[in-house]
Length: 302
Ligand SMILES: Nc1ncnc2c1ncn2[C@@H]1O[C@H](COP(=O)(O)OP(=O)(O)OP(=O)(O)O)[C@@H](O)[C@H]1O
Image 1 (cartoon, helix red, strand yellow):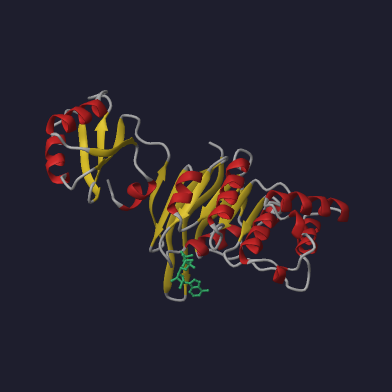
Image 2 (cartoon, protein in one colour):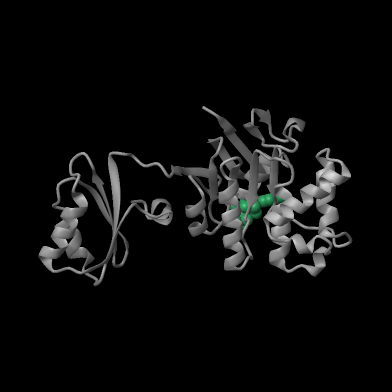
């Protein structure tokens, strides 16, 4: 086991309000983990604890084998806070140089590092610009660049693409995906589509508790099919498909969409049997795909 983050029975309250309740989870080296949950669920609080900005009331948290906030993590763990800001008085380049020097780099090495990370987020030409001269999206990308200074082993990104247009959001996703072999990530976002594409692990936080720790891996004996129907005949289709050998469960995830779970052991040709059943009854379908979406996993309880 190569744990990069270990949280054990973490609790945190603000006054009488308990925000994190006995949170336990682990992330392994190479994980790209999604932290997801409704507004006020406690995501930023958890990020702040992992970064060492806040102390938990009880429980333990270790990153790369060290206590959160410990000096040993300096340069190894970096974070993009939700409300990252730049000083309007200095250029982006000067501020990134400063972060490089804080990590012990010489002036020259810090400048080289600034240019490297700005190139990663396609902001090389803005090195001399002050924050006020950058668009919101550019400022966000510059803040993401800051999180990549040095050689962090774990990067915590709170809402990395919030406020970015689709093209810039795509660039950031591609960047994370490109770096994810060497760097582990924990990403908080409300964009489920984005997380589904990027992440191999999901931490779903609700009312300060971890509801599920879903991962890309599923029970290898059980598979999912998502069936989108042409017409609203889900009730009749459900009844007919319920008779198929190997079916474990069938749920309507939307009006014309069914998610079927089946046992591969019991019926290796289950998808074929579904198609035959639809054809025999004259039911038309728009799409039949293997697997289920993250949204279905988290919110439709199939
Ligand atoms: N400094 C604070 N003092 C008092 N209460 C706080 C403080 N920070 C956060 N809270 C409360 O703790 C709860 C969790 O807040 P947190 O910001 O961690 O949630 P979140 O999941 O990040 O929300 P969002 O998705 O809206 O960013 C909320 O009810 C919030 O009002």
